[in-house]
Amino acid sequence: MPQVDYYVQDLDNWAADAGGVWEQYDVHLFYTMHYWGVLSVRPDMDKRIEEVIGRIGDAEHGVMVWHHALLGFPDSSTWSAICNIHNRRLRGCVAGEELLTEIANPNHPITRGLQPWTMVDEVYLMDEVGDGSDILLTTQNPKSMRTLAWAHEYKKARVFCYESGHDNVAYTDATFQAIMLRAIQWLARKA
Image (tube, rainbow, N blue to C red; front, side, top):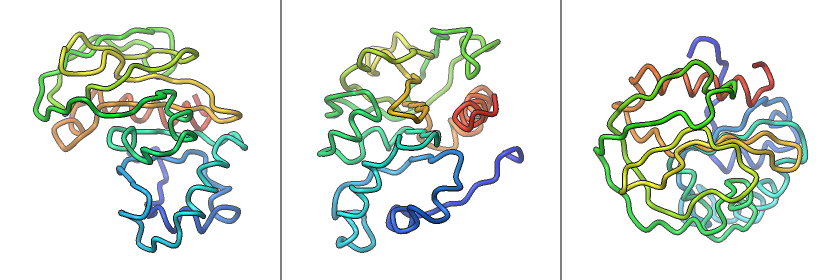
């Protein structure tokens, strides 16, 4: 996305940078599925990572929780609150699923002007989103949770969660790309 300046950072360095470069980010985008002490480069960083995650929302940074990250930090009640899914236990996962995506809120800046579309992606079956979220995208696919994308606020932060986006099949879909760009812009308070 030429409209987005990005900086890829592993979780340990992201947590170590909190209070420095971290404060300059408009949006924190989480994609990978982190578990305490397993995917950390340095397991001694887990306490720091947990502290920094606890600070998400203390400022007006945008937070995108994208695909695999919905399953991350399974023991963190803070991460569950950020995702607004209180039980994120996975009950099913199917790759290569044809997914008809419907527009639940056509007036939100992320979804405005979009039409329903079909793409192939990995889907998750887990508990639905909690109260207080603006449901943006849904599906009737029985192998997936009904809500595919939602927005809400966590403390001072705007949060956008999106189940879709497993691989290049999704990444090359024009509507998926539009949603990702619009979401980043909305999270950064530039849309």
